Image 1: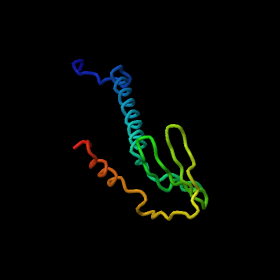
Image 2: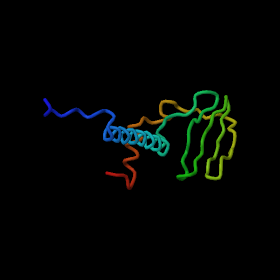
Image 3: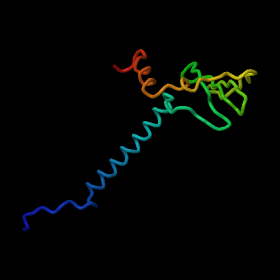
Image 4: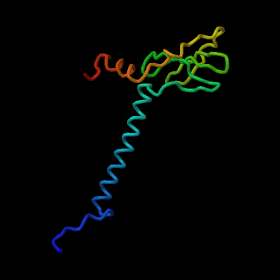
Length: 120
């Protein structure tokens, strides 16, 4: 019976190296998905309490305008690399249709794929 090979120890160097590389790959994947969700704003609606982002308009890659609800009031806010600027409080609140406010992931992905220069 001395001809039978012994199974590799779970604490061998190759097993630990494989485990370490697997963990690094998983953590890297989590960071990549998080970055993609932030970059392409796929994370969905933000805020359901007294303060919430109702809608946004992207002006450039680093500038956008947000419609924010604070209690019962609505405020337009401009966001740029230099900071955030309150543009104007709205006298008459804008009614947002919640069913069409945020497209589902499949629609956002389809729109992204239709952009010029998107991978085919």
